[in-house]
Image 1 (cartoon, rainbow, N blue to C red):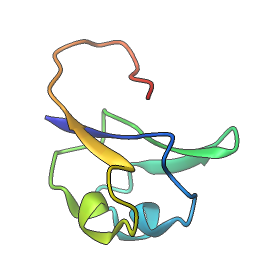
Image 2: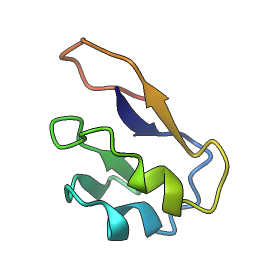
Image 3: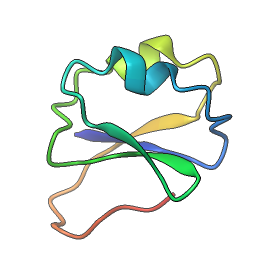
Length: 67
């Protein structure tokens, strides 16, 4: 399981600030989670002030995820 940032994100940066894996980056006017760094800990969800801005995804797919 990994996490992805949805369009509900308000770009406050809390997820990136508290990510223990340093896997959240601001790119092309939005935050993204690099799935190679995501270990599924959920810290980003814990600190995100917006419900459903970050969601869990079960994947085995090597392609980048978009929400």
